[in-house]
Image (cartoon, rainbow, N blue to C red; front, side, top):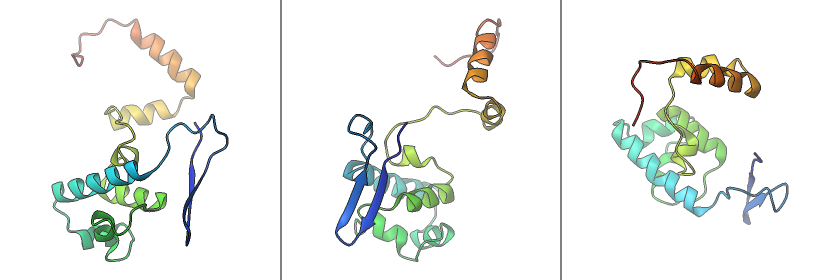
Length: 137
């Protein structure tokens, strides 16, 4: 997966991709708007005021308010990650790019010790075991 790098300067935002074919997901105004809405929703659900969240994320006092009110229309990716971390949320999901399935933290930690081939072997072994645990419908 190719990472889109966004540079901010006085003229605006410049996106750089490795090639035309590798563009995939393009970070743009839709993701910024999704992030703005999700930021406000999560902040309110957790009962945190904008100033407190800004400070806990290491931003200026008005950082969150500026994003929520549209004065900051394209926050830097580092800002997105700081806010997501402060809210204990997934930054990709906050941008509305995709939703990730929920996974038990211990299971994710266990799987992280294996490379992709190792994880495939584990999945193969697990898939043949007779399980009597409930599954999602």
